[in-house]
Amino acid sequence: MAGHPARQLTMLRELRIRNLGVIEDAALELSPGLNVLTGETGAGKTMVVQSLGMLLGQRADPALVRAGAERASVEGITELAVDHPAATRALEAGAQIDDGELILQRSVTTGGRSRAIIGGATSPIGVLREVGEHIVAVHGQADQWRLARADQHRAVLDDFGRRHGRTLARALESYRSAYAEWQATRTELAALQTDSQTRTLRLDQLTSALQDIERVDPQPGEDEALVAEASRLDHVELLRETTSQAHRELAGDDDGGEPVPHVLGSLSTAGHALGTAAEYDAGLADLVGRVRELSVLAADVAADLGGYLADLPSDPQRLAWVQQRRSELNHLTRRYGSTVDEVLAFAESAAAEVATLDGGDERLTQLREQLPVLQKAAVQRAGELTAARRAAAKALGKAVNAELGRLAMGSAQLHVDVTPREPVQEQLTADGADEVSIELSSAPGQPSRSVAKAASGGELSRIMLALEVVLGADDVPTFVFDEVDAGVGGAAAHEIGARLADLAHSAQVIVVTHLPQVAAYADHHLVVHKQSDGAVTQSDVTVVDGEQRVAELARMLGGVADSRPAREHARELLSVARER
Image (cartoon, rainbow, N blue to C red):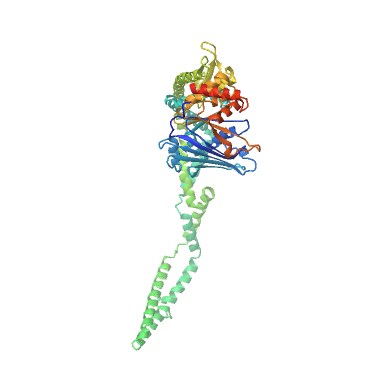
């Protein structure tokens, strides 16, 4: 080839794998352009793709942890432009990007515990997946199942529409919004119709409860206040007698009877006596003050006791009323809450529910009127979605056919058929009412059949490559293809190699292949060697060039690496690739 393409600012620069499958410890240094990975069967090429899947947030299978190890780990070093979507999402997740370099890490233990680190920050696997989707698109032979399932044909078309222009994406979003509103209305209407009898019973129960509470008219905290008052009324005579005695002891009687000694009189006498003595001993002045303080305090207490006695109830009917009121409140607290405050909270909630239930008939009428309007809107949006899909189907077919022309399938024609199911109003789903079929005809004018039935294994591989190239997001800088050339040979293999090399002018491409015709187009050729004990270590993933590369291509051709005819054939492959 004419040398490596110009260095890309966004790419996967290095991949480090530890204890994954047959790989004990391997580091792959990647370059811009077309990177090809080859090696003997069982040498661990597939594990490289598995490791990339892990690194991009796919399921981490603990069964892939190498025997004797506790965990498998993958580390990828990427170079990102500052404004790349992957860099933006990584920074939002708390990652650090140093000099345009972002490090992604993923590990899984034999127990199934998985961990992801983005730019030094531990992150959820979902975030790792979001970042990875902007950096690497992995495609393998297993992706051909998408061509065998009719429902996936629609997904392929919608994916193409999402990535190329916004018309289909907007139509799908608009339809799904209308469909969701229609379905929500149907669900609510069905629920109201089903629950009509239950709703009426509930409304009667709540109305009766509110009437019961309104009749008693409880006040916040009333139950606790009545408990205190009942205790006071039950013991009013005891309270009157003891309080009167205390008042007499402090202030004496004021009924004009025979005076009796009392605290205020004694304190007054004591204060007078000490006041006289203090004239001759200043040390008693402090005591005189303290006695006078006691006298003031005792007078205050006596006054308060007098006020308390005056306020003691003397109406014998009050206790009967309090007991009756407590009985009424207890009736409420047994039914609607353990306290009056809880009863009042229940009443507030019940009133709100009554207002909702009471408007149920009105809501039923409203929903019945809305439903056909919303269904009509969903059908209209479904028609707009069909039109957008048909336009995208033409563009997808044209783009894929152009790619097939580069892959030695120029006479084949791929068609994407979009047919709405009838009657549309009865066939709506969350994805619309369209049946989408990707079909293939062997030549222009020939009848077409479903691509999974019309194409051979080798043709399916090339169709998948064409679809993957066409579907590739503009902002994904790295494509990975895992033996997408399976079932292909001869001139078709050359065409695949040439197309991958062409794609590598605008993106970094990593290809796992067993075909020497494809490997000959590489800008950067890595070979995985397996040691005799079955392990692959760092030293066993090597970059080959010159005669080493010729020897690897000779081995892939089925010959002996040091065989002169095999080497000549390998050099011829390199020459053809260089010329193309």
